[in-house]
Length: 261
Image (cartoon, rainbow, N blue to C red; front, side):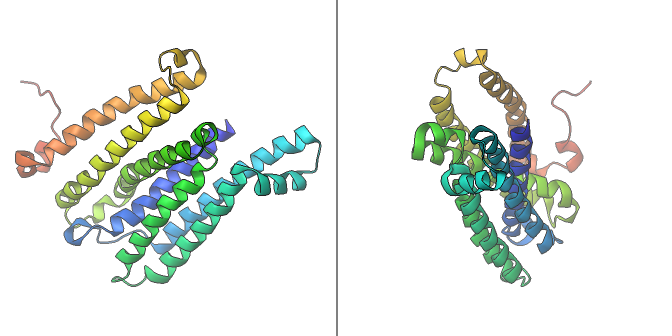
């Protein structure tokens, strides 16, 4: 239960932070009139460090109980000797660098896209740092870490901008041009998400149907079923913003698939 909460918080914070930097890179009329404040990104980055420490603290409790040692000793052992500790240390270092870059450069309108680009590179490195302690990495080493990292990066670049636009969408300079620009990002992210997902599934659950007997396989199946409607609506959204669909009014683009006669 605690792991599920930590995972949810981590992925949400990572996606939202990625969204802030991605939207800051949107050129010209495709961006926002009023972007999220610098402090918002800094707060999200601080939250990532707190969540990463949450994984360390949880494992330290297990170590302290199992080895009958003090909690402080267990904490230091996890940080020094475990992959979870390595993720926390490397991740925290990357987050600090990201915060310094953003707070130092993003005040200047001309430097803001440069700061965003630098931090998006750091986001990829952060995903690799987090994936050091992933399930896939524990089973398949470097290969598993890479596939887990790519899966996380794809998720962040796809979902992150949607979270930001969901909150700041009224500040879009030109909604149609932003959607057309972001659709390209979303398609590439989706392809990377699906590809890395299949690779991870082959590593962790090679016998997919048989894995449904386990709780992990059942959760995987539920995730895949929930993913199908996202693909359908995403595909419809892409069509409505390209070709003849781009000329439709907002009301016409929002029409359902099936209309009453």
